[in-house]
Length: 81
Image (cartoon, rainbow, N blue to C red):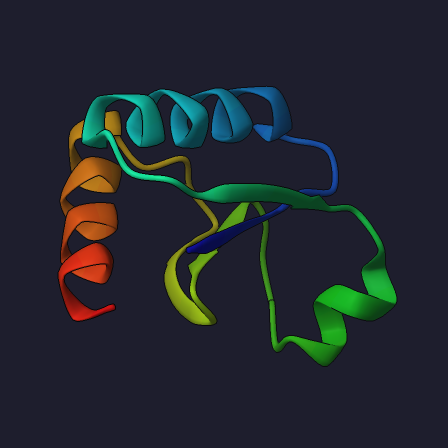
């Protein structure tokens, strides 16, 4: 599983920390990637940050989701794999 965290400035540290904690709580193997390049964000269709994609599916944009939400999304993605 690949989780991409798109960040520019606001909420960057909180978003990354939330994703890493959610992966830990979910107990799944996942590669967490941080994307800061604006051109790459535009190519991925990201309109506001922070944004999170799990296996290329956008799950959050413009806010830092709660860890519990992220755990649910990660578990759902893991069950589809």
